[in-house]
Length: 147
Image 1 (cartoon, rainbow, N blue to C red):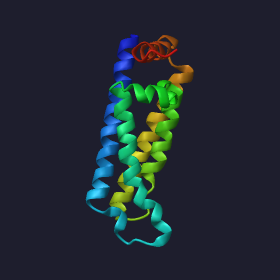
Image 2: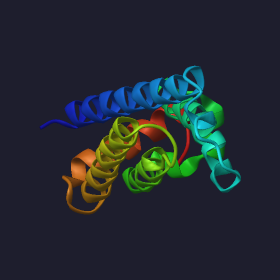
Image 3: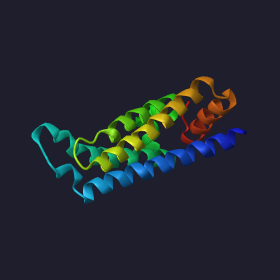
């Protein structure tokens, strides 16, 4: 595949992942899932939908070429950095101590999906076609003016 094709595929993967992460955060906030059967030891479940929305914004901003992201979050400019970020996101969204078993299963399914996307990015970084990873890095550098 050509470098432009790889970049387009990776861009769409990022956009779809960001939209789904944002939709999960909005769903959790609207249904107040974090307040059902609330116990003090589960206080961290309040922050999960808020973090999901913040990370959604970060992923969308990186895809729509916001200069602030390129300057402050340089790890997102490489396949390895994005891969580790997706693995972290998979850990965040799979955590659901409250809610019904179907909500917990949905969190685990989406968490596993994000882990697989993260592993895909890390594998591309190490064994992917060098032209594609170099092309991605060069395309990002040319768009943001970074070296």
